[in-house]
Length: 316
Ligand SMILES: NC(=O)c1ccc[n+]([C@@H]2O[C@H](COP(=O)([O-])OP(=O)(O)OC[C@H]3O[C@@H](n4cnc5c(N)ncnc54)[C@H](OP(=O)(O)O)[C@@H]3O)[C@@H](O)[C@H]2O)c1
Image 1 (cartoon, rainbow, N blue to C red):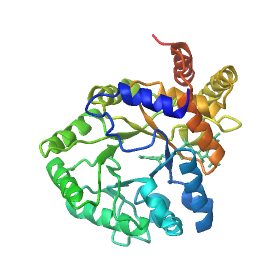
Image 2 (image 1 turned 60 degrees about the vertical axis):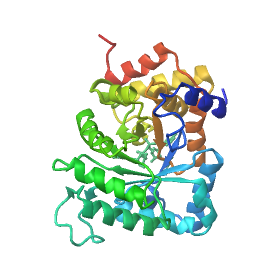
Image 3 (image 1 turned 135 degrees about the vertical axis):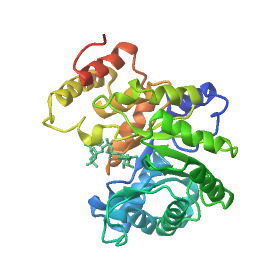
Image 4 (image 1 turned 90 degrees about the vertical axis):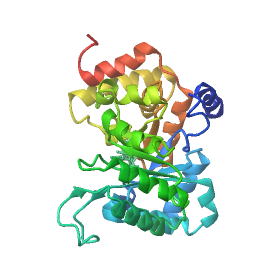
């Protein structure tokens, strides 16, 4: 099945609240590791362009990536071809404060979801990315002393100002999502996503209510580290669980005539909450393998074979 027909099928099947409203491409490119790549602005631009050519038009950022440097590296590349901006969706995160030479006021690592911090972070992100708007802003991690009403009001103001178009969270448990979503809904808004870690070596969201909530509310989860940060591909495998998962991935890859990484992404896409994987590679070939998963549907036993390999035992 082509990328387009799979997407159309997905759109047709969407919950009415979500239909047509999810603002990202079905695979997102993650910029977390960009500072490690040591690239020129031209090489960074090429990475963005190659993703767009593959239909990956959404890019995932956080203020803290690369010790507060990645947004600036991306913005510098985008400035080489500013017309590209309107073809992209920029996802950004805020709410973590790192101890860093670039943030001398931070004395310890902490979380901050106050109005003042969110607004300052968004202003900094817009400047660094050299854009006038973020397509989606996420609270990066749950803040134990988050005032949900204050966050919701801050989000509503940022939307009215046109600085941020959509809002979500990351690494939230279902009750934390519910708390902020209720405050948003009092203002006629809603969270569009919870960005979470999910892969056969990290199965918790399947069983702790996170994905049940995503499915019930029709809020498509974004999936970070879809290849377990590379552990699903690393040779030799780091441990027994990785070895078992890699063996099953290889078998299914051979059966489907695709790459093992494609199977790993197809395993995520099989979930009815309609996850949106955030791929982390610097290589366009790896992004191509991720996009190919949109044309692969795993049968139930194949899906459970990867669950079993990750968990180390069959289902009860
Ligand atoms: N919300 C959060 O808390 C949170 C946390 C972590 C990450 N994230 C987001 O999620 C994105 C993805 O995370 P991630 O980088 O850990 O994702 P990932 O796709 O699980 O891992 C990417 C890593 O795997 C390596 N890799 C090895 N073989 C590969 C293959 N065949 N195909 C693809 N990659 C392969 C890549 O190296 P090469 O580049 O050499 O291919 C890269 O270092 C990040 O960029 C960030 O935007 C969010």
